[in-house]
Length: 340
Image (tube, rainbow, N blue to C red):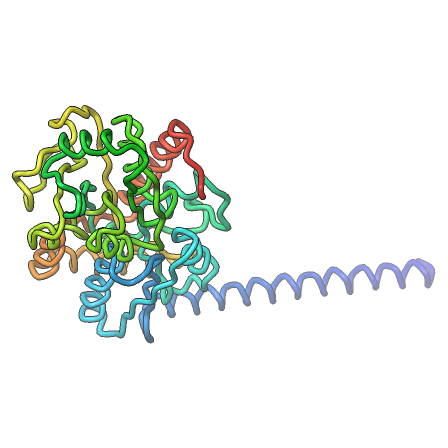
């Protein structure tokens, strides 16, 4: 072997050894990271947890988030706070959480419209099934149709007659363009052949405030947002959008009973985490959430709001989300609704 060949052979051996050392180093680094992540997951949580709410304070999602945060703080023996990031019909908060570190310390109190409706009717910077891990649905509830006391009606039939006698003079509120309250009300207006104007708000709280003040005449909202106001005589609830009457309002008929068969809209609120959140954290949080939701105190608070407690598993939540994405994409397409 001449000197040039010997040099080339030695160089190749050097590069092979160098690559081997590099691969070994990479393997050890990944192994160390894996051990660190496992240790971190097993000791989670070690600091404050944030639950991001995609709407303004005062609405249904905000109220559920605060009940959830209180119960989690107690169960995890760690501070759990609620932070509101309203705007873009919930997309701002969802985008923020999707880009947060997947360490279990930044969570989203997801509302069904943010993950199942909004991406179907407008461009979002997040993909529900790709960018989030479902953890557990805290509760679900039907929507109800509420009428301002400024409108001289007491039931759905009277409201339809009044609206037809005043075409274009009435308006309806929603918690945001493309929200369930918007889609539900718009579909009802279409089916009832009414002429009404849509007024969009940044969340259910401001919409309810203007309904109570008479600035808007009708609002399709969560039972939890409206039941207390109805009991106080400030509004009339004239229809429930579920298969059965709400136990909190047994005298209020469903839309099917009032001549609108098949008219049904339900929503849910659940905790999701950024994609790549360790399974150990997801499973621990799901178990804690289930226990918290099953507690009598939590169930009492939720039921008083008109929310049916759920507390399901991550896989069950994923099935619900996947189904709703398909259903509401079809509904949005059929109704030809677009973000304003």
